[in-house]
Image (cartoon, one colour):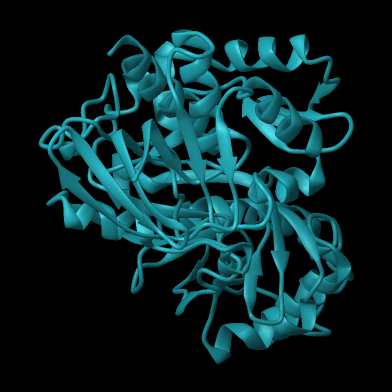
Length: 402
């Protein structure tokens, strides 16, 4: 039976980075590392990320930018490997980059540059693609990994298989199966950073506006637990998308409502009253056009039964009703577009079963879980890549030291 020191399951961001980090810290030749993946090419989600330019980290990384059943769990790994640490690697590799809004860092060129950097960094490890993993079993002194190319004995196994998002890229639930096989609990995996879908009464407004984008504030929850995101919102034939909706989708659960402010910098009720006091001959849709795109203004005027109405003819109650539809639009999504378009998986291996400093399973020495397979999910904007780098680095440091 083939024997190695460490088998890493998954050749995505976390798996490739973990392999390189083990070799960088343990030294070339000090450890035999084998990376397995059923895909035909490594780093496929890296390749398509950021519109092909890879949003590889975010300068605003902090615990408040992650969703987890244990919000404090990620602190140690994130402290041990920061955005600046990854930027240093990018700079050393000669990759030009730029900052977009909200601390998001992208390659000037192609995401392929990041993949090439990770592959170069893990020289000395073996990358074996087109190899499906069937199961992992415990044995004395380690594990046996059953693959489509035979069995492999390893002292340590790192599960970096990702979640279930974007199945067309080869995503599977094998990491969750391995966790369950060893008695680790799961936080229910669900689609995150995903467009939301709506019932017909809401689609009657959304569908005709498909393709229209506005800046909006989308919120979920109440009181101190309320979460808000201000960013682009996109109308689609099936509901709503855009960055603000993708962000809130990671917090939303079926049956819950979301609230949308389509003009977050305006008090539309006060504005309509002011315009009415200035003469009021203007039509309602035209007045709403001060804050909204014309198509959306006309759709809201029609939906509220005031298409063609003049401001002068409307009382305060009518204007308040229209303004509430703009500033406090409350919706109850019926679902999301699911794994097909989800950018990440929310949930995963329950962090209560893992050591936060090493990512090792508390009850199974030598078994590690890193990246998206763990119940730590970042906001949109490079945070999930930073979690991949940081969690993989934490595991690699422990493996190299052991």
